[in-house]
Amino acid sequence: MRDAYGLGVGALTFLPQGTAPAYRADGPGSRWFLKLLPDTPYGHDLRRRVGAERPLLRALRESGVLTRVPRPIPTLSGADVAEVEGYGVALYGWIDGASLRAGWTAALPGVAPLLGRLHAGTQRLLEVVQVWPMPPEDFSLPFEEGLMGDLARLRVSVGEERAGVAALRDLHLPHEAILGQVLTRARAFQEAARARPRRPVVCHTDAHGGNVMRDVAGELWLIDWETARLAPPEHDLWMLHPQLPEVLPAYEEAVGAPAVPDPDLLGFYLTRRVLEDMAVDVGMIQHANTRPEQDEANLAVLEKYVLPDLMRVEQNIAELWERLRLR
Image (cartoon, rainbow, N blue to C red; front, side, top):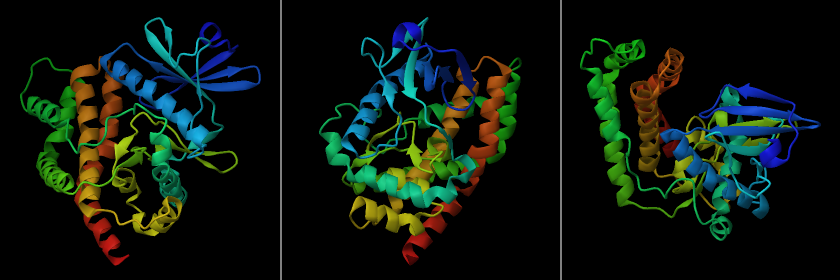
């Protein structure tokens, strides 16, 4: 911190939540958020996305499209990422607040207009942003082959496999049939989405409770822009599905136009996301993890969040379509 950023830091506090190691850095009268980008395949991909995220954050703030987003801090040499013993280090201003997490659903009336302002600001952002953290939406299922291969390997008994792999098998096998049904639905939605292209807007793509913060003044912030991309508005709107018909008026007021979400696009994102989340955790257990506590963390996410979402996805789609029809 001293050498790369010229900042005096008296303490670093590990922050256990998130997809990359992160710390709160405390200095005389100031705090910062520090993210480590490891020298691993995942870390290299994360570094690329962080490199594209930071110019986008500056553009959001400077254009006034959204000002309550993280403030990236460059190194003394002007670089976006510092190099420290094989790790990349990305530094941001500290946001004095907390992620909504379980309180996210109650905050959707405030989240919807933030997404509306983002979508409405697409043209201003396109004028200054050259590279996006993720490529434009192509409605692909890039994880499908890897996920199917990983799950097929689970059916083959291995004499000296790790305990985490055995636990994954026990957790997954009872849900194979519903997984196949959801994948079939995702492919059908994919075909419909590609047949009816819509004008893309700048989407955050991941505005869930962990990525929305409320500061001490009660204002909402959107953080973690590492998967932002150009995509149909439904890429953001599907995540509001618990209250989408109710919060659409606030979104429409912010975007400045009527909104008629495409049911097939909403269905595509609802199904693709749960399959993608499953692919990440299954892949980490089978290919990346080296310690039991890593397996336990991924298994906990699968059991607490991913598999329940998988079981509910058809019900969520049906309920959302009906509520939008009645709107």
